[in-house]
Length: 207
Image (cartoon, rainbow, N blue to C red; front, side):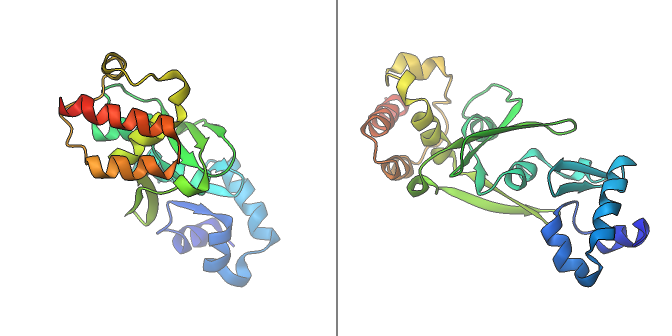
């Protein structure tokens, strides 16, 4: 298959996995095409993000890190500092896209799209996110309250639940937190420390 034909057949997929190509190309997905993918990568017509995941030519500017994060390592959803920054709950710029997964904790670094970090949680707590689609590429991101509870869970050993510590993290007290969601998501972890931190945080933002 020539590159121009391939580009036309995949023009609605700025980000794709080889398994998606199988569905689109049918019998034309063969060893020759896989060799072409490698050659097109070398000529910068495609950008390889990880094994079997590519960004098509001139598509980098239409993708956001959330879309890449969801595709690079799944199941996963964007959460923790990245989601908290996105919602304005913390003010700091976040240079690594942080996500939650049920698989082992892992980090990825790309040349063109930055760093991606994935933290493992129990399957029972893998909830509290929604899915969006942009330019035919979907991504998952935690609700604000779940991003915060994920943060409490993964930092519980270093947190004491004091108002002073919450203040040091610069959590936005003016954000419209849904207290019922905070408690609902905290209970998913079945962890007394997480529930303690959550109740203290609710007291902190409602004082």
